[in-house]
Image (cartoon, rainbow, N blue to C red; front, side):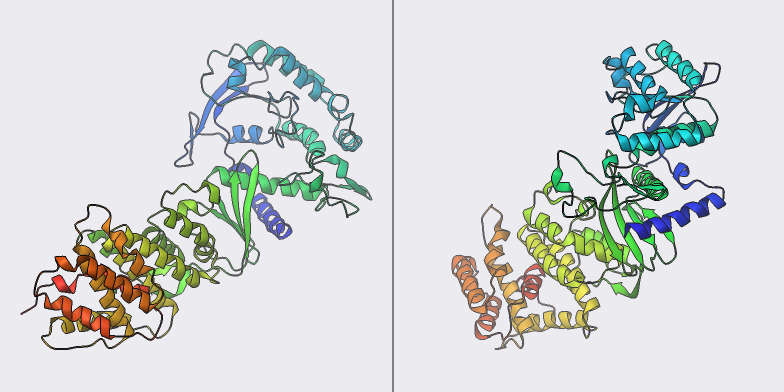
Length: 581
């Protein structure tokens, strides 16, 4: 997977270069802080403030042109905090043309002249001060120095003296802010890039002990999302001659490093859903609020910005098409008027994209709690409602795969399961209009995914009219089918519960009815409700007697239809209706 992603990235990178673009620097987001440029005469040329707006993901700065800043900053960063130049990890830059330190380290006096000198001593003679104990790292550094030359000690000493003379006396810098102070010394770009390579090449592999020479090339374990640690021997594959997962040569590992830097830029911008199209040879990234475009075939990466770039999950994309083959109709099947929540009516319409359907599922079924929890670890989901929380846990991956990856497998089956649990939960919580809204969406999905349901709306409404007519008529009637029966049970349950004078949450009284799996149990629970509240039924309520008689006489043939019981329960109650004249 990663190899194919790197191939596409390499092509995208080269295409950008041919068009005069640098996709790494163009998308780079510097860390919050104060950035100072020192010219060749040792004067402060510019001081730039950088702050990332966490809501808009836009950079807020006092300088409209930060291209040069991005160049210096990007080429001066450490591979990771595990591979610093400064062994005390107070200074966070990688070459003598830059000096990175947290402002707090100046305020608390963590930064000392001794640490500054130690930093520059390592940069002055890396082979002796840093790599001498590692045969592999020493060899890599010696090859670099033979090719590109030694350190310019005159420039290094000049920059060292400037730092020691000014770093503790920069009155124009606000040290109260918990961010970075970064200082750059002006020079040609090629000098910065050369010194970056001087640091980078011996440090780019995870652990140089696992490097292997093949001909004139060195292969090693890349450092991205990888780990080999002497304190964790279980990470090594002991049965292999080379106990690491895979090895890359210098060119390959540099490309992978650029790829992960690019992904880090995307994550910093809040674009954590990455789509790599291996057919169209394109890479696109989106925030959760953005609508992904079509992907012929390829890979999906979910990324996260931490101390390093993390690929949290990956999936294959067999073919993602945003536009649905057939539009989806959200019907008001129940005919609910939504008098308390007229805004619900606005959602009954036709939808054309997966993203639109995802938003409807998120809002209607999951009360706007789904999308923010798509990629949250189960232990970190902060929802008090246990039913809602559990439904999110078991369904979020399947729903996300359908909405954002175009993977249909298991989607409707999962939606059937969790939607019923969520509707029952809404009923028990006492939100009947919302339950009706949710039930309508559930039935609309059945209409969409199951064939032969084109007349669903008419059929459900004819059923309501049929039961209503039978309850109103002054003659003996009977229930004709299972759907009428379970609707009638829901109606009767709603009426009996309405007679309760309890101040407590009386909607919970429907739980035994909703959880009944067999008709015998259903009838028994209904009779128990009747015995509990029949004293409150006004004398001469013929509608109650007719409805109850029809329920008692009918024996259904199939499984209990919880949908229809809920439908009857949340609908306008026939017993309370005024008879039309």
